[in-house]
Length: 345
Image 1 (cartoon, one colour):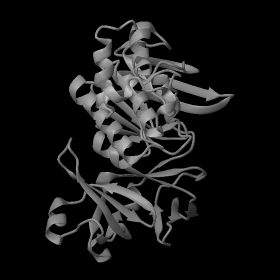
Image 2 (cartoon, one colour; image 1 turned 180 degrees about the horizontal axis):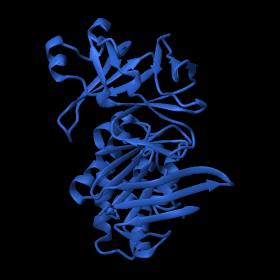
Image 3 (tube, one colour; image 1 turned 30 degrees about the vertical axis):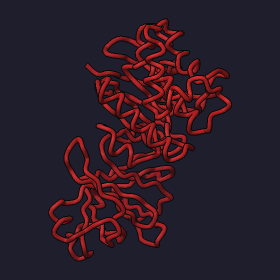
């Protein structure tokens, strides 16, 4: 049984469509990342999943049961950390304990508050009595995170949890989220522009664009402006003058996005090493890491200022001595590029 199932969801603000999802499922005990540009619908989707906002049309099911905003027993299993921290004008302790008190779950309240503060790197002895106005931006964000962790939710929704905070606070928030999933079995649904964190943390990545779901899995999305060419082809000039080329382009390229699966790209020491049907781009290998869920080596490659995520051949990495900073060629087949037009599922 899916943790969430969304059917025929439509939502709008002041008659402007912001979300259009025919069907979408999230697995139990999973870590799901939501990524996409600003205005793609991530915050709206989290609000619906948090049972805070009802969709204009469609249905949301939680573990097979119809879920409605503020729906009692289901709502108490879910906690949402919005983009803004929104602390109460009270002490740190009162902020963290507030949700427990509202839900009348005050057994060992002091212990749970202390544990939650410790998880985000705030010493309870030093911070519990501190007023809200005596916190830095990073500390306030961690207090807001601790208030959700104190609830030990079965689902934790995080909307840009590390944006506009210092590096130390961002790291502690990331670690606290991973700890909740690992030790409490909390399902995480995270919207973030931090792609490297999402790629390393998440079991599944969901890409949103203009209120629709582009796809799932490890992908690279290239946005326009596009230049059409004969034969349903299109190209986009990269920052360094190179051209990203794709086939099977839609008739209307306005707002369209091109999607490349991570498994459809490869790295080469020379452009001549790639097969003739592939298009090549020159760039640099920027980062390598080991994907914990699969054991595969994942790479981030930059051509111009465009980032590509792929799984390079581990034997080539070892034999050729490729490492971050190496100048390489990325190859892909233009006919394997998928397209998503604005406003279409």
